[in-house]
Length: 446
Image 1 (cartoon, rainbow, N blue to C red):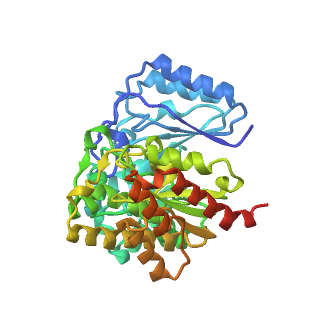
Image 2 (cartoon, rainbow, N blue to C red):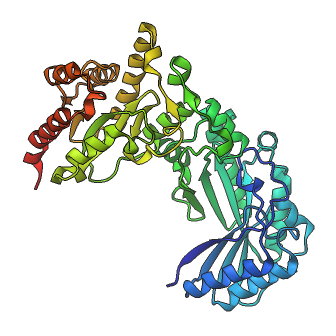
Image 3 (spheres, helix red, strand yellow):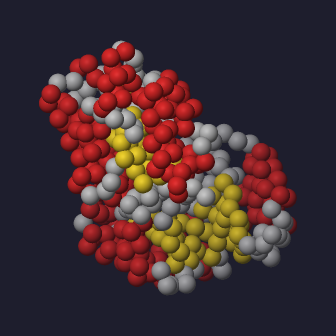
């Protein structure tokens, strides 16, 4: 196969595990040396012809408590015997400084040690609780290069709320890269994301820090993109706002504290700045929420989906729910907190309804503006007297987009007289939706 490959070999726990931005370093993995080496051997047997292998460890391969010396030697020998020419391993700087590096000298194998400098500023390193100084990084890099070993350096973009100051952010990043270039064979500038179990994650939820979106990150690193020694890593793992079980609570109630709950806010920010609607789904269908969660298990959504799923246009429909948590694309209706909330409509007051319409209209507007280039047509399917459709209408009016409403007041009034609830699940209402979609979309189908 050739080229590069990566593998994660975790053992024990990071010797420091206190970095402000890192959740991986707090993990503990119980594994035997035989299991580690066996995993590596199976990986190499499957992916033959690798020339360069990166080994990630959530800690330090040079930490003897995580990886005993004989295990490290066996890992390097196994990699070399598989025909790999270069291996990149991770370590904190103190393990480079404390240990002999003789075990890293392997005939026929170039060994590069990757270290996290993060920022070339001791005061900010203290804020990050990194547990090292810039000088210690320089000494470790120098020690590695004197032994003929490679040096790879990680630089973090935006790793702390202090970088709300964009000028400071740019100045520190440039200074950090310039220093690392003097001591490294390669550098990776990494966009910082909030790892669960990190202090940064807590600050993200509290709204005092936000990750950089692609445009912000590209502007920050533009100066360094053409440098052959610098790699740019905008999304080094599949970032979505994940909430660990111990942080999950049932969000039941009405009022501003539920509309603007921090958990909802981080998701709405994600849908604006990091989310891309599915390719090919160019017709946006707004649907109401349902009491039963996830919505797909509710009588309402089952009735709607069964009524429209058999038509050619369905594969081009992008279903997006609108509710008190905000705008929720179909792909995320099974994620927390969208599975763990109840908006108790019977407790609404006129003021709460006003707040709901105002906040929801802004969220819908923001979503539309963020993804204007994606959709061709917009259809809404709500009770025509609902606060949600009022919010959606307001958003479309502000932008100047055409909104197609699939349930009119006349049809709804007939259903309401029957006392059927929810009205949008009534066969007549679903038929109205189906008819609207066929009328509006069939003409555009191939």
